[in-house]
Image (tube, rainbow, N blue to C red; front, side, top):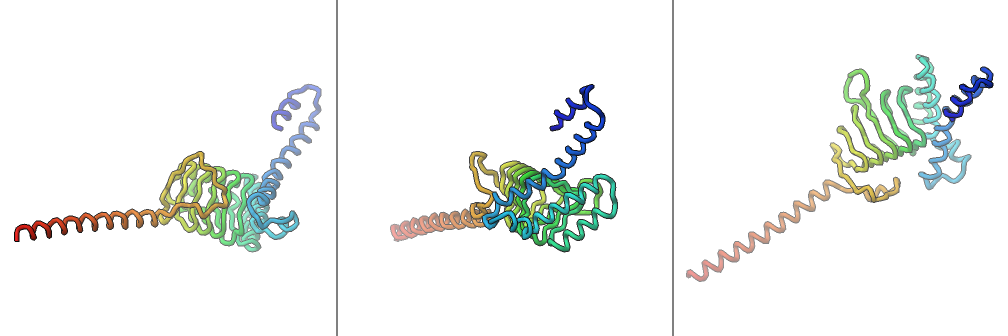
Length: 251
């Protein structure tokens, strides 16, 4: 669309009012395209979404994103008070707090959403799935970029906390209740407190809703320790039997 506008602008036969008209149409399209993507993705990600009327009126995540996109648009144009007021109204009605300065990609789905907090310098990539009680926050009072950056197609489980100016790669899965404090490479899974990164093979195609297939690091460690203890007990029993047999022979 931008290339078409450039070709028309460079044409000598095009009057100035046409250029202005096309530019305004482009701005309107750029504003509503992410909202339409947010609306469509709900039907793909939520099995409970039955019809468009229900989604339009009964999904607080969609309402919070719509209000945020308006607040962010005003924030980027230097408006000081109104964007924060819109954000405050969104928090009051939806339970989701998104700072007007946060950059949210298209096709983002905040499921349920109660308690979600997204900080001022946070960046959320396209088609990210965020569940309730998630925090994309900072770790101090430093200025500048102090909130996390999420890549595309990221899944953040309920209650997860991603803190600080860190990079979360594409297609990363953050387990419920995890606390992530370090960068995470693409195609990895993070679980635990603090978050432990477990890479998975790129050819594994998991649905964003398959939360039951997330690995349990603590259970794996416990299983390894128990196996080692059993092995040591067997070796100790062998040594005891050997010592007993030697004692019998000597007597």
